[in-house]
Image 1 (cartoon, rainbow, N blue to C red):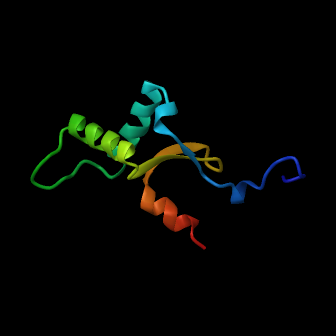
Image 2: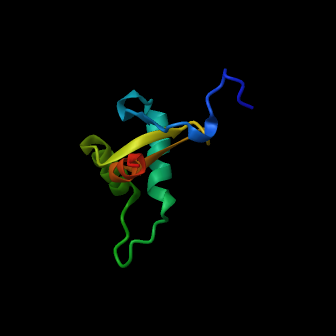
Amino acid sequence: MTDGYFPDEESAEPLIIPYQQLSADALSGVIEEYITREGTDYGLIEKAVDTQIAAAKKQLEDGKVLIVFDPVSESCQMIEAQMLESYAKP
C-alpha cells in the first residue's frame, strides 16, 4: 500500500554500506555468505576458508566488491562493483 507516507518498495534503490561501518560479526556473516554463495568447488585445488575470507576482505578494501542493502528484500550482500554500475545505467 502506497499512501504517500511510504516509498514505492518496488523502485527502492539499493544502499551501499561501507564495510568499515559493520561490526566484526556482521562483516564476517556477510563475507561468509559471499564466499559460500557460489559453492566451494574450485577444481583440482581447494581454497581454504581463511584464504577465501582474506581475498574477500581485500576485494572490499580495493573497492572491487561492495556491501549492498536491498530495502525490498531487506537483505545485505556483497556484489561486484561492476555489477552495481551496470544496473545503474539506463
